[in-house]
Image (cartoon, rainbow, N blue to C red; front, side):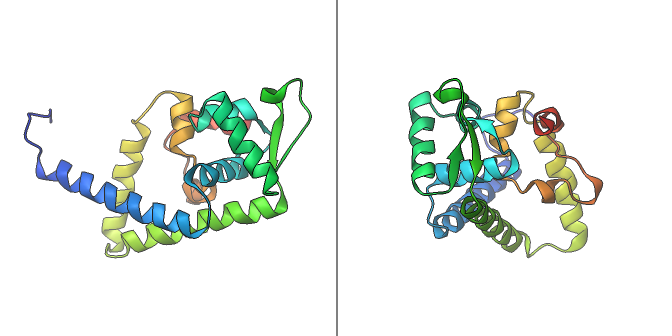
Length: 177
């Protein structure tokens, strides 16, 4: 259905629910003590170790100087180590053991928050919602950087549970690198 200048109830409910979920997830993230960009960086590096600084910047939509400051902050905190590289942009990043634990705390906080958001739904409704979200998310982008940005806080094991694949299946090649 095309937008006609007057929002339909479904769209309005979706917008309100999206804000509710986003606000709850932001609050859960703040409870980990990390800024939103720090959360996204450690969770992304948990799923994709040994990526370059420039790759992380692209996924998080940060400028070169922005990602450099972010990585400097994560290294100073003891959550990330850099490998040698030809230049600063090509240095590879890996979480330390403390960084992995921190990233897992972010993923767990997000999971608990989302479980709470879905608690009012019965199993049948949850299945219907899962199928609808799989379809919506799967058609949301064709661009790899956008897909990776969408997945920046995802729990990869949950997404791929029970033989499923990420609905953004063009991320498969990226994940396999």
